[in-house]
Image (tube, rainbow, N blue to C red; front, side):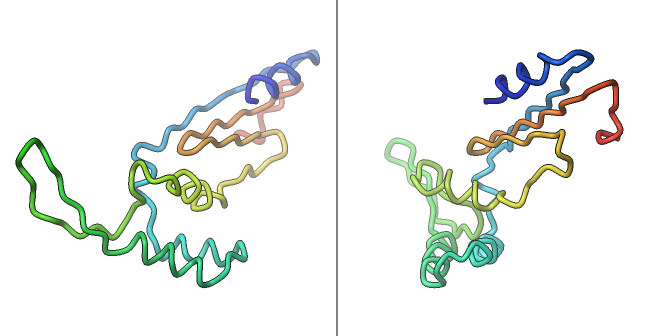
Length: 129
């Protein structure tokens, strides 16, 4: 999709594009359940669902097993479990408020990867300063 936006823009004369690729390292681990609850409420998700998700993400017990050895359990109060089918959706909803501040900037997101495309015409880079 990013390539489509760029090529369509570059069909016009005196145009070019700037691209920034962002990968949120361990993005799923950054979710704060109370903030996610607020964002889900703003998106009109039913309160019972918001509470269930908050409970699911809060005070989870976690341990590491390596061969026959098992670590002590720790309580985790942030993040969404890796491998959980809900994690990509929850992260997308958590970062839903990330939007472009100018019409010439396209913001594309896929799970924890974000691409910002600046479509520049006639040498006018003022939106990017």
